Amino acid sequence: MKFSRIAHLVVAFLVCFSCAAQTAAPDEWAPVGKTLGRSGKLQDGVYKVTFPRTDLYVRIGNTKVEAAAGLGSWMAFRKTASGAAIADGDLVLLADEVNPVISALQAGRMEVTAIHNHLIGEQPQVMYVHFFGQGDAQALATTLKSALDKTKTPTVAAASPPAIPFPDQKLIETTLGKSGTVNGKVLAFGFPRPHAISMHKETLPPAMGMATAINFQPSPKGVAATGDFVLGEDEVQRVVAALRKGDIAVTAMHNHLLDDEPRMVFVHFWAEGAAETVAKTLKTALDAVTQNK
Image (tube, rainbow, N blue to C red):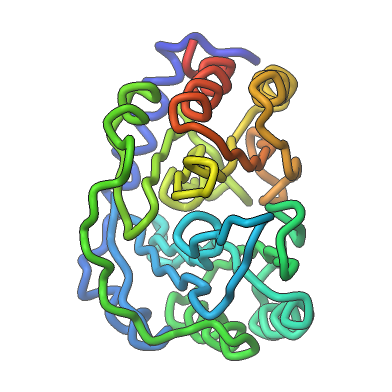
């Protein structure tokens, strides 16, 4: 069933209201951060902890992929109405880390919901393992720490990178129609869906990976951009066509979830070139999504 834009906005408001009602105080999540070895940030009721793979030197052609652009493991937690917790996220892994991590997740009764690439042509090859869990927050954190321990992921938080103006930031922001967030050498944007997305009937807010992500970083060709579009099945072909028309590489198309409602498709991309050219093509792809019409 297709809803009007107004109906979508009403649903989005109700989702945000529901999540706000279940917001946990930051100190409530302190034990989770302690178990993981790194504190997270609380946003709209979601406690999110990130683990950039700064130990890896991954390149595509002559471009080094910045950890904050496309090599960041993350895990997001929120409390449900019953007081239990749910968690989702994905872990950025080298090939030999994948199956030990899967075993660790399953040992803690967490679901592995997807295993796949996000990039193409990167050296070395990087894989992404997505997961979902529900139950006691501390037990979920313990399982995720066990999974991290099967990898060489740095778990000690590094000092925050200095705030450096991103080249062409204003041009990119004006083209995309919103402000971005600078993290070191990366300019990041998020475009939430205007409707609720759930797995196993538990709502996953935008901060739990349910927003289209677009990340810019420096490139020898100007800028590089990577990320993924979170799409309804009827939106996929329009977005893919818009990306290819602007010569942006479509690098993956797949699910991140199981038993999701509505069914969502994640389309990943990689682009390099002049900032204005790349940003204009990505804006055209955004405009091809129903939510932006």
